[in-house]
Structure formats: C-alpha cells, structure tokens
Image 1 (cartoon, rainbow, N blue to C red):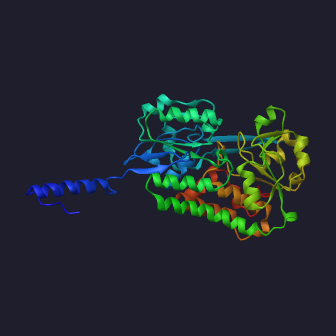
Image 2 (cartoon, one colour; image 1 turned 120 degrees about the vertical axis):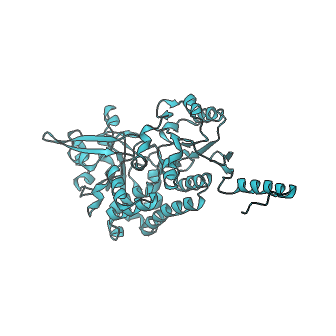
Image 3 (tube, rainbow, N blue to C red; image 1 turned 90 degrees about the horizontal axis):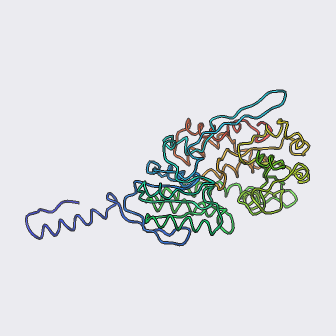
Length: 403
C-alpha cells in the first residue's frame, strides 16, 4: 500500500484511511471470534503474546506444531516439565531401567522446565498466580488431570478463571464429552488453529491424524464377530497393588474401549464401565484375553514387568502372558486424556491384534514418519521423541514378543 502525499486535507483523510486499513491487515493482527466447547463466544485479542495453558500436552502440542509454543508463559500440569525414570525387578537380584521419559512437548520445548505452574492435579488452580502473569489468553482443557473434577467443581473453577477478566477458551477432551470419540480431538485442533489464525495448518494436522484412524478402521472392518480378538487394557499400577489389587483395567465407557470397538474391531475383555477399575489376580485370570495392552497407570509398565517382576508371578498363568502376547502403549504421563499421539495407540493395538493385516507397516519407521509429520521435525528429532515415549522396541520386527 502506497502512502498518500500529505500535501492537503484530502491527503490527510486518505492517510487516516490508510492507517485504518493497515491496522486491520494480517501484519497488525485481527481480532478473532471463536465458540469454545461450552458454546460460549470469545473474542481473541489481535495480538497474542502471553498464553496460560491448563492441559496435559494437547494444547501445548498443537501450539508447538503451529509455531506458537513460545507464547506459553505458564503451565497447568506438573507432568509437562518433568523427566521420568523407572527401575523394575527382574528376578535373581537383577533390574532393568527406563530413563529420561517425558511428554513429547517437553523434548521439543525444553524451556518448559523454567515456566511457572499455575495448576496441578490434586491441588487446584492458583488464580492469583494466573492474574499476576497478565496473560492475553487462557486456554484450558476439561478432562485434563488438573481439570477432571465433577461438573459442579469444574464449573466453579471456570467461573473463577472468567472472573479474572482475561479471555478464556475451554476445550473438552473426549472423556469429558457425553460419548468419547476422536471427533472431539479434531475439533479441538481446528479451534486452536482458528485462535492462532493457522486454520489451514490445523486442518492438515487433524486430517493427517484421522487418515491413520481411517486406515486401521478400513482394514479391520471386514472381520467377522467370531474372529475379533479380545484385548485387556491393563495398568500394572503400584496404586492398585497398594489397595490389594493386581492392576487397573479400562472399561467399556472409555476412549480406549472406543478405539477397540469402533476402529480396531476388537473386543474389550472387561465389559463393565469405569476408567480405573481395580481387579485382583483371580479376576484378571478369569478374563482370559487374547492380548494384554499395558497402559500408562501411575508409571510406565513394559511387558518385562509382567513377565519377570516377582510381584506379578500370579499373573504369569494368564494365557496371553504365556504366549508373550503383551504390548505396551507409549509412555503418556498424566494419562487422563488422549493427545496428538493417539493414532500411535491405535496402530500399536491394531498391529498387535491383527499382525497379518498390517505386515506392510514397519512400526519403527511408521513412528518416525508420524513424529516428523505431526511436529514438522527432522528424523533425529523423531527418533528422540520415540525414545522419550519409550517406543524404541518398535524398531524390532514383531509388535509384542520382541519387547
């Protein structure tokens, strides 16, 4: 746009018009109006430089992909800036170790370790700290570990955040919706794309994730009911053991069970509802699954723990354990809701359940391609993300008995 000659009152009027048009141009930023998951309309400031997030990695992951992560000034999950290590007994005085596990967004944004925490699971939100940071925008995700309370408590928390007078956008993870499904994850991605005026890129990301879901769904859709495998979603949780059980299991009303039934076309061995049901050894033996899927549950739990740890000796009578039909999902700290890596869970379970249908997919290479595409990183960084989620075993050929 060419500046007018300032030689007359007409030129001054034209200059004023020029300035108005310039302020409305993308270079200066526009206000954006969005409708969040509450159905509320929020006006987003024209320039967003300071964002507080309360999420377990979903919001931060999308912002990383959209090139907006440097705008995050505070976090709402203690799991995001933390590095994890575990040691398990292997019998005969031996141990095996897993080190430097972390949420992928920390590996991509190491500066997160220096950011203040304004919320964490079990302690609530520090509203004074949020206000003192003077953010331009607050983005929270209901269903995250810091925001997975009852509807009444959640509404109270959101009301207190709104009272700060700062634009507040509320997302909902799948388990916070009436019927868990992946459609809500894509909706979250698109909403974040609109907030940061990166709608095309957000749409590409959502479609890429959906493409792998659709591939698995198409390949397994022709399986007759009698050929469907029975999978047990098991968490080898020390919390369950401390309460007299052997582990936690995921029930029919969880997103993981939705993955099994609607996408992988397998059956959940546990037919009752509930996300963290504690079962004892006898109850687990009675379920008799074809395949055991180990989920993040108060720690990372690899197949070796089930095969070798002395405190699981009773579970080694399970048919799936004897057959070495046990597979671990990626390390997912604060596993209250699924994030951008959810297609990895689907692919790992599908390939382990129906290896003949996915022989053309080499899981290790697929994972590297996945990380590279989702986060727009090079191959060395993709390999690092695999290691941080303890998925190095996927470089081997078979999906479960090689772990």
